[in-house]
Length: 148
Image 1 (tube, rainbow, N blue to C red):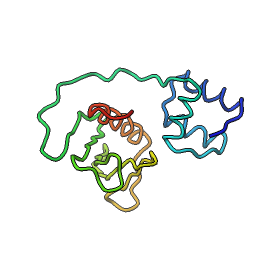
Image 2: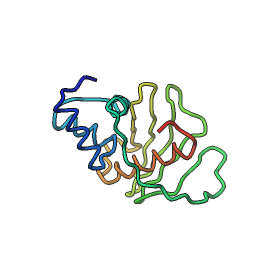
Image 3: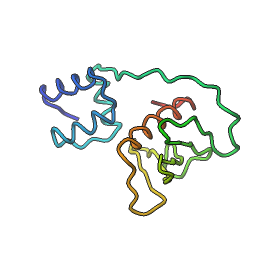
C-alpha cells in the first residue's frame, strides 16, 4: 500500500495516540478514502516501523475447556469462542455472542479478512460490541499461540 508522506505522518500520529490496527483501518477509509484489509494495515504499520500499544491483558486461569470449543473470559459482555476444528477456507474461526445475546459466526480468511455472519439476518452489533469483539478475538487468538 502506497501512502503519501502526509498520510504516513497521520498514521504515525494515530498510532502514537494509541490507535489499534482496526482504528487505523477505519481512519484511513474515513479520512483518505483508502480501503485496506486488516493485514494490509498490519504490514503498513510494520513497514513504517511503528508499534501498536497493547494494554496488558490480565492473565486468569481458565476453567477446563470443552472438547470442541475453548472460551476465554468475556469483556464487556461479549463472549468469543474459537472452533477446535477450523471451518474450511479459514485460518481461524469461531463464534461470538454479543452483549444483547445475539450471536454470530466469525472467521479470518487466508487473505487476513475478518468475516462476521450473524445468526439473525440483518443484525448489526453496536460499535462498542464490535470493539469488545476485536479485543476478545485478539486475546483468544494470542492465548492459543496465534499470530497477532
